[in-house]
Amino acid sequence: MSENSVQRWLQAAEQRYLADLTPAELTRSLKALSACYVERRAGLPTGQALSGAGKRAAFALFYAPLHFLTVREIAGALIGEGAAATARPRQIIDLGCGTGAAGAAWALATSGRVRGYDVNPWAVEEAAWTYRVLGLNGHARRSPIDHVRWPSEPSDLIVAFLVNELPVPARDSLLRRLLEAVGHGHRVVIVEPVARRVAPWFPTWRAAFEAGGGHAAEWRFRAALPPLVQRLDRAAGLDHRELTARSLAAGF
Image 1 (spheres, rainbow, N blue to C red):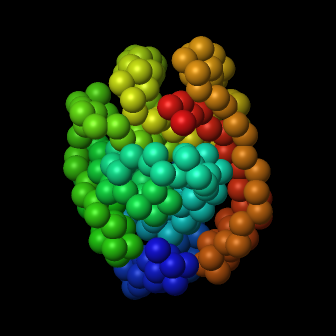
Image 2: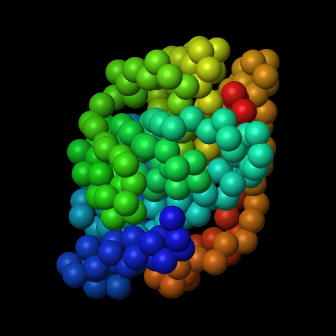
């Protein structure tokens, strides 16, 4: 997949959402969305972050490209070349897929088909659109993550920027299921923000992954942000000149 295809996806997203929003409205929506993730996290499990057309547009036009760039960088580092590349599973399961950006980035790196799952109906529709615009073999389905069953053949299970939004029982259940999946030959990748206060569970997960042969990593890299993302970043008083994330990986 060429860089031109990614640019077309971003441009198509702009056309999709900017027809109904002014730059000022989009900036206000981005500030409100960012506040949901930083100051009002208690509402995340109930879907408040994506309530309203403005916040959905801000997510699609700002956070989706950031997630895509971040996961693409991590995929390139984890998959590598040579033996690891030849052993790539051909199916990606994206749990809590959102707009499909993370799963799409991983699918482009592995040339695999992607299956996205999310409880939010707008996100599922958006993920399907993302796969289609990028020319991926993919589909999205509305489903709680605890209802998703892993394929019988080895797959890549991607959980990006979701675990910190789960209530404790669902998070504990997911950890058990993912570790069991690794034992059955699946590869698992968890991607989360670096900020420790939004992920107090991370040390427990890290210990569990490392006990099962997995590893943790912290990522910092400079990225060439798309022009609209740069403008929104400045207008909202944010600073994403450096992208950061933490990951847990097992089965590689």
